[in-house]
Image (tube, rainbow, N blue to C red; front, side, top):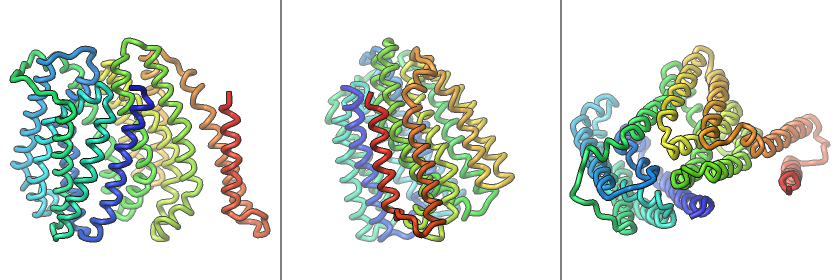
Length: 462
């Protein structure tokens, strides 16, 4: 399959998941209390961390390897299954301690139930990797869309009959179970009764560095919440979390679709640097066209956006959105480099860069916490700006590309959007100082929207 076909099916799947999440949030908020949502959030902290350990990077290795054999795939299957049950029993054993840590007695039962999702997911994680390796994203999308919708219906039904927080548990377990059944149905692969440490040892270098990268990345990405929560009030943390979610939600979903689609194609063509480079540059160009307009657009109208969508009580979020926008643009490009390093088998470089990234990001959070949240975000941008250059440089070099290749496909849309944003800001200020100005805010926006589209199409006509 082509990159476009992969992106199309992954996007369909991701949009269905987002739709189910948003619809579920609206429905569950009618039947569940804030406390019940809080209990599930506590459980998900544990689940998300455990997911780093569960896979150990072996599924990515299946996608990346040039050749596979039944013995290796079967060994990976039983290794995944083993760790799935290890996590199940570990959570059973530590559930009471985790509940005591969060000071929430009801969390114990929730954790013990939701832990069953680990062995269930482990049963077909190898099947999913085999399908992604062959770019069978159309079949994967069918499974994920059906599982998302059906799991939501079951969860809503349980909440309707008074199941409380267990409706969310039902939704999680139903999704894992239905996905496992669907993936097995589409692959029809059956493991052999065989396991060999020698087979697994052959991919240990790849997987060990990937697991270390996931650990470092997880803690560096979550350190801002910990530090802001420690040094500032819960209100400020809430404002920061909401602003971060608004800016990163579209970024994470767009880059997830592109990188998930890109990785198997890069892996399949890892010895063809010219083709891999053209694929990667195509993804970067897509991001350069989509992300800067989206982020700068939200930043320019952040004040009005917050007032209209969130309400007056969230006014403090607007300034945070404004400063997070350039960081989000940089992160959209940085997040693509992982697919390149993994496809080329260079997870050691990926891990080493993650240490460098984490040092700068966590350092920015700690230093910024001595002043204000806005200062944290400013330092966070500087850290990401420094991180951006080596990450993109090494990814491009692995594929035989150069900096000028990246600059050539990215500078036009980025410059156009910032110039356009500058015009919007200038005219918006003119409107505020001249009530007789002939354009209303709506017509002003539409006017510049049309100008931008004409300018954009003219610039890229060649």
